[in-house]
Length: 210
Image 1 (cartoon, helix red, strand yellow):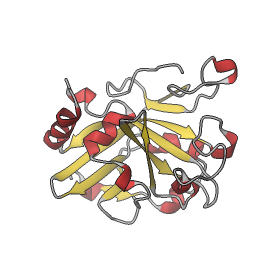
Image 2 (cartoon, helix red, strand yellow):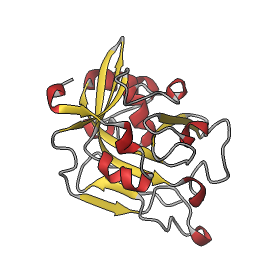
Image 3 (cartoon, helix red, strand yellow):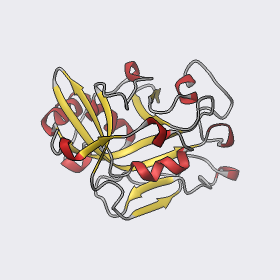
Image 4 (cartoon, one colour):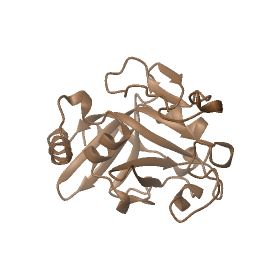
């Protein structure tokens, strides 16, 4: 992993805050996945916050279920879910244990293991450019090799999936806006500017209303 000596694994206490506070702090951080195939690392460029019982767009809005139980903590784990019968999406669990809040990883730049990321993406479909490798939450998980078996994996204890902060994390300009594909009051789009992205980054996904 390039620059590993200048990176620091994010602490659990840093994530034990509401997702809305954690989300912008994750921009510029990297998620590493170490497997027998090799290492793929993604620099996070776009995320969305979800606030549990206070957020109709959250999987935890109606309470704990077998599917969403990881969202209820403790912080520092991945919540990985299957959607549309074909895709996996990954979230960083935040907040105090017992309170469901998380940050969806929407997009990122593959900064290590690009050849392996391409192989995974091609096996799952088509990919055209480096910018497309991790653009969108489903593409991001394919590039990283994450699926439902990683639901609940600890990402701050030095295991095979690690969330780290390079020295320059948090220095980029950040934009905010409505979340992608989430309905708001009256079904006219998400009312919350809870999507955060690195301004002008070419890997950020396109906005799509619900």
